[in-house]
Image (cartoon, rainbow, N blue to C red):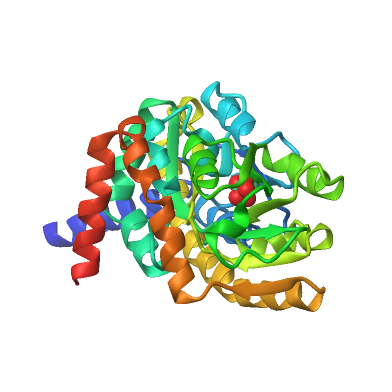
Length: 336
Ligand code: TK8
């Protein structure tokens, strides 16, 4: 009888527990997430997955409103809005943020990663966490690293087949000293500029060229105003998926966990789409009449050698400890 009563009580308790409304730990929220790229960029699919995952986990309470093509301001401006707590999220290149966190410059070092696998291992491993911890100290919670991709040069003047061909080309670079020096070292006339201004600057011939991954050259329609694409793969700058720390601290533990989990689920989708679309984008760019050239192995090596001085020059500004940690991590990964 006693045992029966106990079972009954446990049963009642279980029913009561089940009756606690699910998603009680979630509040109705509208999360504004901005992007510099357009919605047909792989980030579009990433945000779609992120949204669906959050709907699932929060019973529809956490809503994601995407903004595209710099509609809420450029990468840097949006990131500052996160720091002051007036915007929830941004997907931004790390590069324009080195004024906020100098350590991010490590990702801008020329020819840092050899392939996507290396990038994934570094970003998703302990090195990525090292940077995440530093970002928190400047008011930014990084939920995941998404793919921007290997960057390639486009211009309207001539094919770049060796580093000497950069000479005199007016090339837009991100607002970032490591990029500025890399392109100067290669002989280009480097012009720092926000992403939102690039198309018009190319169209009006204020600049000759720019550099971005195939998917961005495609979805931002740079091929319409550029004649040559040289496959230089000179840098892989990741996307950070940032949340305002000020607003983050007001979220429940369940909300924070859902956001972190979903940013990672979405990351896997975003990277998959990015890698699939990369090839398709290149074909499209060629089909639109852009002249594409690869660098032969010897010239690729010479370009890498020429850019090497940038590493030494910038180790101090980036932070020697962070640069060393990156180098150790790469040695470890490459040894496997
Ligand atoms: C998108 C940017 C952009 C970046 C650049 O906001 O500025 O060239 O590669 O794609 O983050």
